Image 1 (cartoon, rainbow, N blue to C red):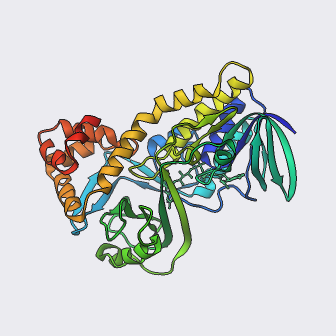
Image 2 (tube, helix red, strand yellow; image 1 turned 90 degrees about the vertical axis):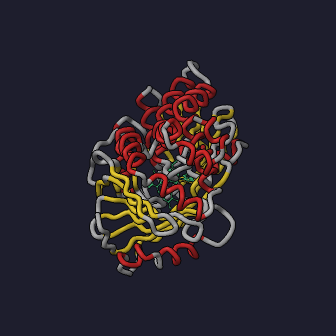
Image 3 (cartoon, helix red, strand yellow; image 1 turned 135 degrees about the vertical axis):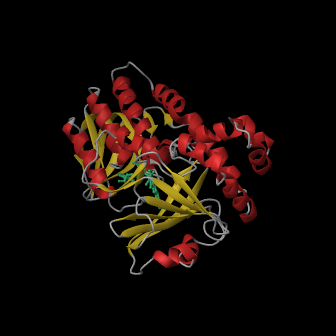
Length: 388
Ligand SMILES: Cc1cc2nc3c(=O)[nH]c(=O)nc-3n(C[C@H](O)[C@H](O)[C@H](O)COP(=O)(O)OP(=O)(O)OC[C@H]3O[C@@H](n4cnc5c(N)ncnc54)[C@H](O)[C@@H]3O)c2cc1C
């Protein structure tokens, strides 16, 4: 078997990368280790409107709910309502969504091999186990879109991301006050270093959390979350669709080597403030696919991919990482103070105007330029200001 471009992993990043390689003229093969696309699901399925646009599939049957805002709960129980002006995000069914993305890639001429696990790459030889049989595929370029445990990353000798958050979630019947609002729970007793959530859809919710590594397991905090007064009053028992997964944060210094490029979770292209990886992954995957097709024609090298994706989203990811680290250092008292600060009417107006779940740096820049900046600088330190 011989292909210009082999893309490993048929998640959102792999589907988009293969589509763009094929659209740009490369004979492209997508390989996926599982027997079906989109399983097992390791996602809450909350994506912003721009993220859906970036994926180029419009609103399909995978949309389960449309969200207009969020309620953020401080450790002391104070509620902050973040109101969007219009639909801010979609709750999606990841299985149907991932399949729709792969179908679009196949429409562009991509070949696919299911039940085919990548094992190694040495120069142009990609080794796989396909339906139990060892095989070798000749590949001009290899795109590793094989998620946070990337075997392509390991085989190419590239470094891993800075850190991995532990995530856990399930679905259950849930009666929210407002089914168009996501609920976010903060606090070191709820989700140390990150946050917990309840994302409602069709009388249910995805209830889960992500947390810093170390300390107690995510399952411990998930049980505690169910005792939170807000969750306890809405959660109606009987859990299904359990998810356990990691979220990679902090991109490695290099995501390319020889004829290999990493994309999506494999490259740590995940928003450090929300843990969302679909949006940034899609942006970078398109670049990877296009550059791979050019590279097989001798019109580009993998370095073009590294340069272009970092110029598209690198700054947002590194500022996001600094915000993530700064928020992670706040104790519960500081978090209460931060949420009280955000709850002031004039600050809430700024959030409504400039809040953007994909680009939190825009909001922070505005807040640090506003009249109430002293409080923010006191909480996060003077150095924080120099980021924006
Ligand atoms: C609890 C939790 C909640 C999340 N919620 C959200 C959210 O609400 N919104 C959001 O945007 N993101 C969310 N994420 C992150 C999101 O799921 C990922 O960022 C996204 O799936 C990454 O896409 P990807 O294509 O890079 O990798 P993946 O979706 O992980 O796809 C990788 C694919 O590669 C395949 N593969 C792996 N190894 C091999 C191999 N050796 N050979 C062949 N195939 C292989 C896998 O089977 C898989 O199909 C969440 C993550 C977790 C853990």
